[in-house]
Length: 135
Image 1 (cartoon, rainbow, N blue to C red):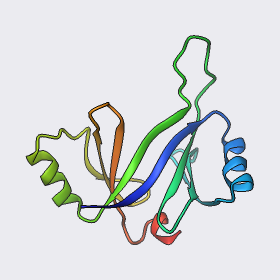
Image 2 (spheres, rainbow, N blue to C red; image 1 turned 135 degrees about the vertical axis):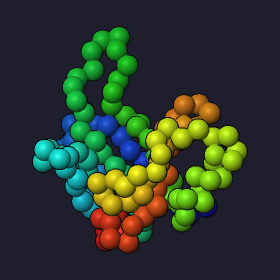
Image 3 (cartoon, rainbow, N blue to C red; image 1 turned 60 degrees about the horizontal axis):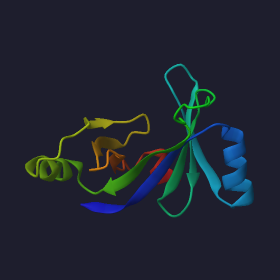
Image 4 (cartoon, one colour; image 1 turned 180 degrees about the horizontal axis):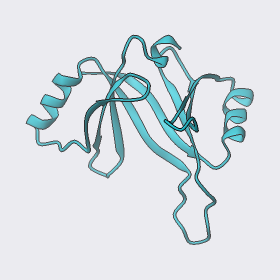
């Protein structure tokens, strides 16, 4: 069962500028950062409410004329209280999983589906020891 909106994710052209906007100007707080296996910054979480966040990914390049922007909306995340039951219900109703449930770098169980318009939807069961739970 869906319990809450976990986060909305964006790719940003200038991570520092985005953090300044959301934190310094809008008053959000940086909650934590995650790095990839090579130690490179992967994403930054900004705390919006008790258990909701904005997830910022650093962009990988500049937009060129006539090219679709890689900056902006990326996906949104819905929190679930029981991943196994949620996946069972989705499959029973013919929903194809884009990615089967697995543990993310943050320790949370997650899987991915697409809505009818092709938008990526992350489903996440929060691990009590995850940085989201601690934040």
